[in-house]
Length: 255
Ligand code: 13P
Image (cartoon, rainbow, N blue to C red; front, side, top):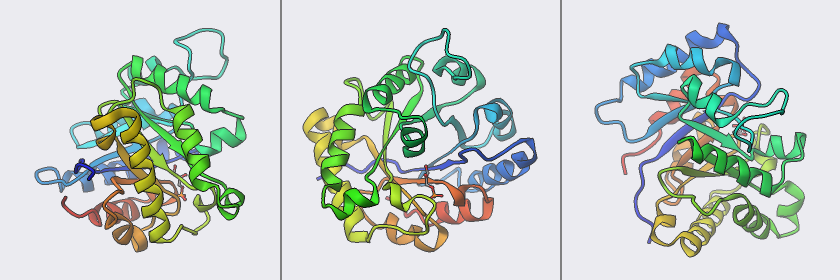
């Protein structure tokens, strides 16, 4: 039986957002503020690296945390255009997404590189949100769980713990498509992943938060959050609009 963990509702703004969107971020922070005293979840928005510093200042004093979307595995050095974990911390980030499928696809990131990024994040005190998920072809071929097992085993570092790691299951075919797996399939995958985490990390593995991501919207959040092995969501498109993001937050039941 998995322990109850505090849910996390995280937004991923991807390559969207300039200073013009800071007022929208402020509206998210203000909305999250309303639930501060008895909030049943943690809230986070992962903004483009250029916005982290201003985003942190924009939401200061609210319960909304700010994160980055990627970091390099090295501490520093000759990696033009890359961002280190220390830079994100310096800008005020609390978390960083690593191994998002868009980075795995666009930049050929491998599990071992993703593990290096998670380690770099941990070394700087950042929570690493490690993303895994199968393609449509892999699901049709019946190997979704095998693919996710391999990604989990290869991407999660030895030091992964509930305090420094979140895992996001994001089926590639559900991202930005309006498609989602059936509730049964989400539950089956999350239960399976929970078991993998428990086998590898023992009791701590039952407390690492497991998020679902891929076309989470206000219309489907409640039924997805009703799955007990879903500890929150990683939200792309619907996190860009304060109304949608806050409606998803409101769908999170007290646990
Ligand atoms: P969408 O919510 O737009 O499908 O994106 C999900 C995602 O990739 C979050 O990281």
